[in-house]
Length: 312
Image 1 (cartoon, rainbow, N blue to C red):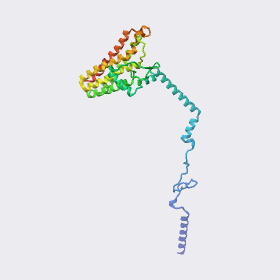
Image 2 (image 1 turned 90 degrees about the vertical axis):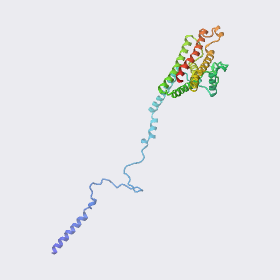
Image 3 (image 1 turned 180 degrees about the vertical axis):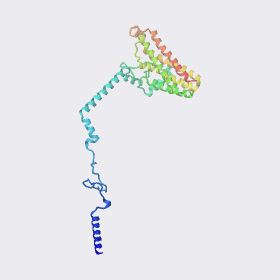
Image 4 (image 1 turned 45 degrees about the vertical axis):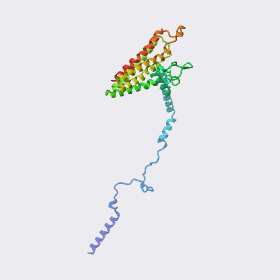
């Protein structure tokens, strides 16, 4: 019995010794720890990473890259070459435009003010009361429209053309005949008639060898003044019916013919004294008179053609 007690005691001692030498079951290590040290904690209680997350270097920043780009002589040379090419292209475009259209001369025809526009509209509608039709010059250069009411301009024809298109759209809408195709046809027809009229006038002056200071812009301006009478005619037709339309058509037609004849008289019809001295045009005076009268008589036909379908 004492021997059994002693053996049981030795067994308990060995088990206790093995339990102390073995690591706890919950702390068993599956992988070997290869880190040199545990990550440090910052002041806020969070672990900091072992990698360097600092600011990027100057070479990786955009400012440094742009500085290197501008400092590169090849890049500077390429930029200068591209700029020179752009300037040469701009000069070529301006040169080609100047061959067909002078920008400075075009500005002259838009040099208007409110006073000129009002007086010009009064002359177009009531030309019989205007006395002085001579265009004034300063050192062989005609005065601008704002300085001379007898000078031709392109502002009134342009605005009158746009107003006519808008008025035509309104008239078609009132008659429930409006459509984009019809309005586009109306605008293109009005524009084509002006182009045809100007081309016929230029061809007539060339074939009859009439030497005049009338430019293409002057002819476009005189051809475009008819839109003022067309607006007046369409408005009267919408307000007063067909009777008002024909009364307004007659008034605007006679007024425009009188205006055209008096305006072109000083430019196309030379004086008899200059003809007798051989300084005038080579064409006969009768032919030059025919050109003036024909251009005036052509205006009522176009006005009626472009406005009759808008009033019913």
